[in-house]
Image 1: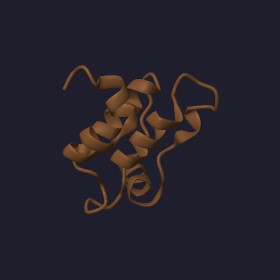
Image 2: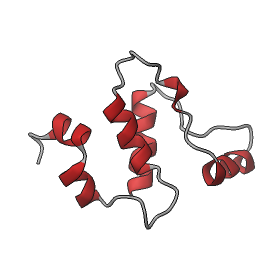
Image 3: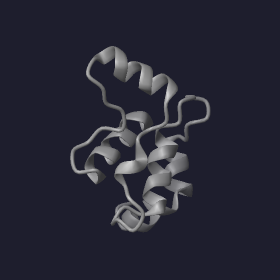
Image 4: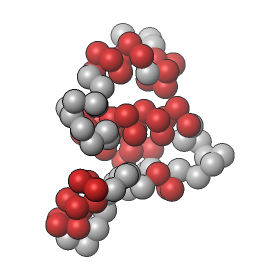
Length: 88
């Protein structure tokens, strides 16, 4: 699903970190439900663009109703379109 895609892209671009992490599953679950993903790993001026960060945040939208579908991402997301245009 789109949430998992956001986690996967975050993991790949952060070189092995997760957007939410804690000592226990309970802490991680609480972060997922209440906190925004930790985007501080992607410093300004790093190779991870603003568009890539925006893509991740869209995928990790808390509300399922507000989270974009795969079709919406393919049609409307500039980072995805610019990096994977030749794939689809």
